Length: 124
Image 1 (cartoon, rainbow, N blue to C red):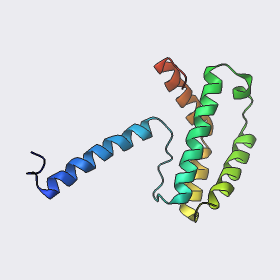
Image 2 (image 1 turned 60 degrees about the horizontal axis):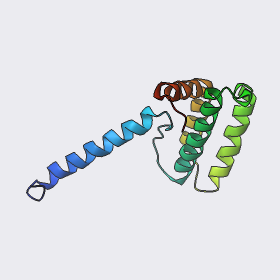
Image 3 (image 1 turned 180 degrees about the vertical axis):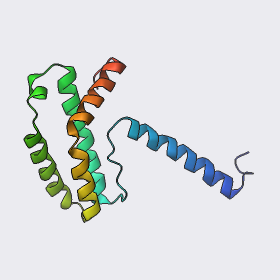
């Protein structure tokens, strides 16, 4: 049956399936949503996903290290991570600005992700 489908329709189906997958990643809160998707952005998304998961789990587990995170320490992590990711690929000014603005709301992201973990009733 899929062999009989036109190339255009198959492309629409594949696009739809990939779109659903993207929504799932965004819903998890671990995707910054970069316009560009080069090595620098992939590196930032990966580092951010791991950092977010770690910070949220600290809160869920009532670890005092989770409560000790400050704006200054989040800013230091952001700068260090951007420096590390610049080694992977060219950093566009737009992506750097977008990540900086996104991380300015780090506390919202961490608490939202912790709430999602609590709602699921488990820590990864």
